[in-house]
Image (cartoon, rainbow, N blue to C red; front, side, top):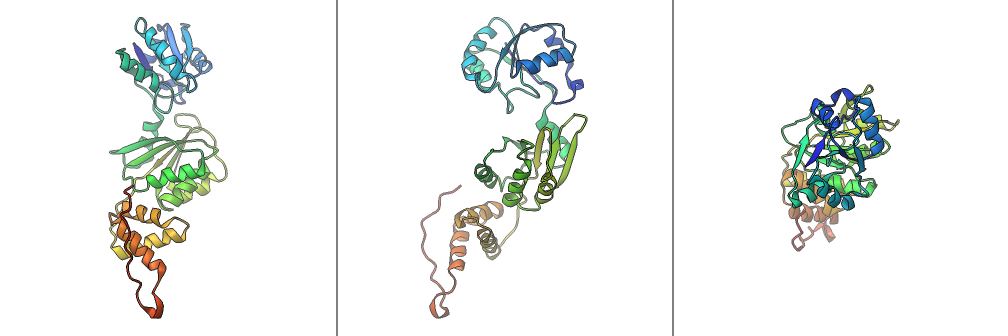
Length: 292
């Protein structure tokens, strides 16, 4: 059997009784970092010394088959450095292989940075989406955030402290300066900090530098009621800010429900301006745009 076990995300007191009992009896542990696991065993006062097998991003695909075969005869405990394995941590490929091979998979529930950040954020929790780590590169990050601009569910991200300020600036530029954002730092640890504000406010705060493990919780988009003229004006504002007309029309369409094609064509006509002698420019015919 494969046993996925959640480990403390900071405070050792959050280690569950079931985790401690299992660590005291298990014979094989597949660990994201065996050094971290050795430290955890010592910190929890575990006298048992199970066989430790490294299972990380670089070897998981190659190790999965071997571990699945072992799990037919003996229980294998899977640990990430913090939180639940498979959630932005190793374990998914192992579980996938185990399911395919008919090997049982179970879990020891416990601490989760995602749910903890969501719970303390003060943002709606009835519907949410976890988006993992934001892309490292600016262009890829902006593209992802633009795709999420109309997402109405609360969004949770992981981020590196070194990239936090840049990511908050990108959040402000793509989702709006006033989009509500919560940065959760060092959750459950001594220096835990939960910072709430708008995307632009938190970008300014983070510019001075931030340390620790970071979760970003972002409010979902609000539905805006716009008429076509207001929508076209918003498209033109986005274009003036450097966004391509096609992308600006798509963003406003997603947020307002207005037709992307109509926004595109009317904005294009507005950019062209009046024709010669003040005559209106005839509305051009354009092929249907692909839906995003």
